[in-house]
Image 1 (tube, rainbow, N blue to C red):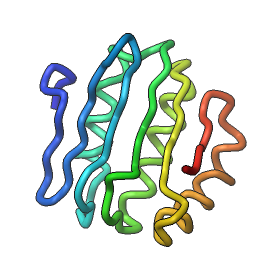
Image 2: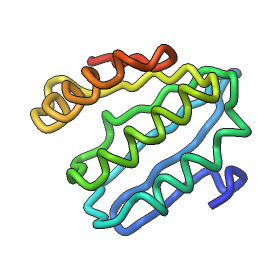
Image 3: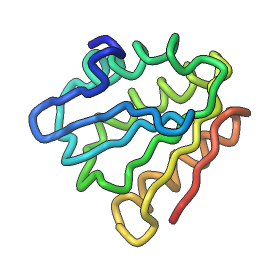
Image 4: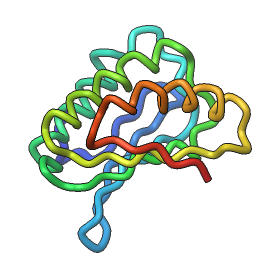
Length: 122
């Protein structure tokens, strides 16, 4: 997937890359029950690096209805790659949704080692 496409759709999952008023957003919608998301999701998010390198991006999970555990590892890998590329990444999730609260509490503990990554609950 190239960044020109701006959207990755896999089964019930849709990840959209948008830019508005100079700000970049990667918004997750639907459900991620993909058994091997590393190549597809990781590949799409990795393809955005040249577009967002040394910029700020908000990765918004609030519209996501569900994410299986297989999706977490590629997400963590992308966070590391974005951090190394100087991309300041803000992860936003809904603390009122139990599975998001549980998943992103773990992600937040890992992100403390990444200078360019922050986690924000809303």
